[in-house]
Structure formats: structure tokens, C-alpha cells
Image 1 (cartoon, rainbow, N blue to C red):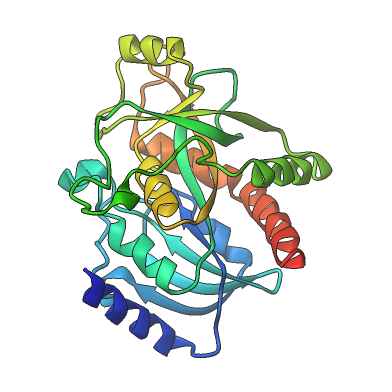
Image 2: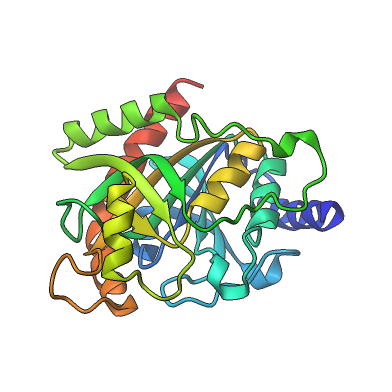
Length: 271
């Protein structure tokens, strides 16, 4: 994978030799409109980047964008591959490894998730921790001692503090909670949702945890936002569907843009 990663980095750098970013963001389902207010300098389909997996889920365009948001360099990955697509928890490993070699120090993750509390569809939850219900790890098969990654501070506390400050300043309700990773692609049963809630989770989804583990493996700092697109199964009478996700996620895109813009202002001002 190392030679492939080097080729990927060379290919990306060739697009804009004068472009250098320290921050990257992965967009979840239906959040493509976050890029509407960014300056896009180059767009590269995953299929053109050596080693990058192609996404097969609606709402994930599968492309890397070299952008500037509020004048700050930000690599945006419009989409991800999920565990349920190929049964590989480490499917995003080439992507995260490439970001590391590109000089990325901070990874911002977003996803669409089901609410297990009172957060309504269209709202945003700041992830403070996760529970991995899958029994899977993207580090299976890694043969070095770095695979024993401490996850006690998976989501940077200072980043969470600043994101909450930005939310308060812009009158955005930003709940903070624990994200539960389930494999999917089927939605959870009402019984599973009751069990997950009892275990202390506040939102549930099918992504994000593998990228978090991979980013921490590469010593990146991580911040993560869940876009609430529905309630967990059995919590209301609405039939769950991916179309529901695609309908509600864009409604939170403006909030995400405001939060990330403010976060970049802070991050680049302190570096």
C-alpha cells in the first residue's frame, strides 16, 4: 500500500503544486452542499487516485476537492466507503494514509445519524466518544506496535470546546454525545435501539469510527459531527429509509459550514 499511497500523493500534488492544507474533512451522506460556499481549486474523482476506493452509496459523490473555506486551505473528501459495502473495516485506510503524507494534521468527520435522544432531524451533534458495536477494526492485520492505539481521547477536547463556542456565538444548538457504530446496511431494530440507548449512546450510524481509529493511528487530531436525519427505530412512527437521510442532511449543511468556517479561523490563527 505504501507505493500506492506515494503515487496517490504525487498525483494529488500535481493538481495544484502550490496548495498545502493541514486540515481535511470527510462529508457524510447528503452533505455535498457544504461545498457550495467554498472556493474549489481542483476536484479529483476517487477513481483517478491510486488506491482510493470507489463509493457506492447515494449522497456520496466520491471525489476529493482541494478547496479554500474562508480563505483557509481545506481538503474535502465528498463521500466515504462504508464497511457494509465490501465487508472491510479498513477500506478507508489508503485515504487516511494519503492524507497523512499530504501533511494533514487535523481530520474533521461528519456523518448522518439517527437520534437516540431528543435531538430532532436536521440538528447537529458533536461527538465526544464512540461505542464500537461491530467487533471490527481497520487495524486488523497491521503488523507493528503502533496498532495498539489509545482511544481514550479519540475526539480532541480542545476542538470540542471551540466548536461549542462557535455554535453558541452563531446561535446553533449543538448537542454533545456518544456515537454508536453499527455495520448496516439495514437499519437497527427497535430492540437494538433500546439496547444501544441503555449502553449510553446518543446517536447511531454506520461510519466514522473506522476513520477515527485510522486518524489516531496516524497521530492526527480528530473532531466529528453527526447530522441527525431521523430518530432511532421505534422512537417514532416514521419508516426509516436512506431517502429520509438524503432529505434531512442538506438542511443542516449551512450549520456545518458555519461551524467548520469558524473552526478553521481559530485553527489557522493559532498555527
